[in-house]
Image (cartoon, rainbow, N blue to C red; front, side, top):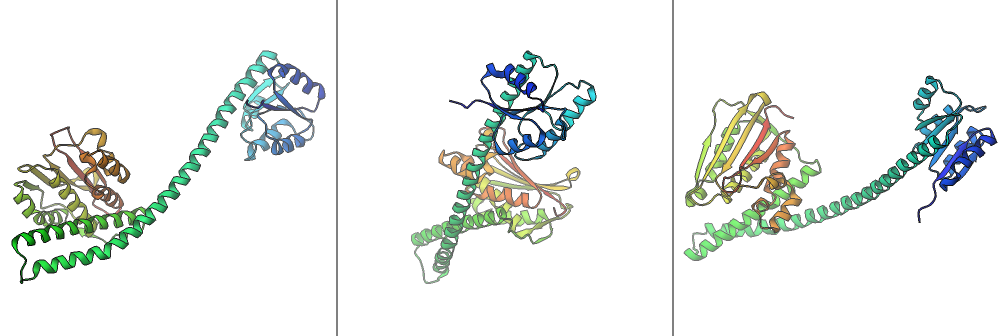
Length: 381
């Protein structure tokens, strides 16, 4: 059963206190009394209460000063205050509001007006208290989640480092086996080539995870230099020539040789472009087409990279989620294309934003492909 609201009545005249208590007695409130300002301040700081009815005209410390001091104190500022006075001039009402009073009622006090104003403010305070409690619960849960996330990220980071060295060793031995002129048979060589390819994919994923972790912690140092985004893109596309040729995918590039350079970390943006193109190749059907473009956006002082495929497309509801690392896990479990690209797109988003840019995806719907666009500012951000 909820406790009864507690009201503090502050007045230097006992008969006024008795009158207010009598008018509110039927409402089943608990009452505290104070005959001067200092006593009111002490009670408010020591005892939990829900409202203060505060007389203005008191000796030593008037109600305006008491109200001002209560509203300045972190412990008492949330307590609603109704100022009660025989003063009715406009300037007194304005002063009451200036010192933080929540309401103002004139003497002689009207019963109906008093009960309505008290009930209304108590109801508002009840809502505020409930909201405050809920916010505290949410803050505590968020703090716990943040701590769990830090622990989890620490474990992931440790596991990644533990995996990296043996994986690099396996990859190196496979590479030695492939270049050994002494011979793997055709079938065995093909199997080793596939294993080597999978090792490279794992190393690529691990590097993405490490870079994401560094960017989240603000520890990723950018070695910026003027770079032709067009030249960098064409250089990367040449690496994909064997793959697209094997799958009969048409890979087009459109650009303008007169584009100004962007100030970027070449190695990081190279990985961004590689991730985007690799992602589009993965979801473009054999015989499909991919268009890669680089163009200037003068009004934004930026260069825009576009990588567009002719695949299945990405539904509108997934176009924001596709870059989120936590949503990636969920979408992958659902077997959705939006969740099948690992953390490559998460890395792309963080890398582009670290450069002061923006990345997004557009898709008109199923079967109409998807276009990833990255906007990179010409000057360092």
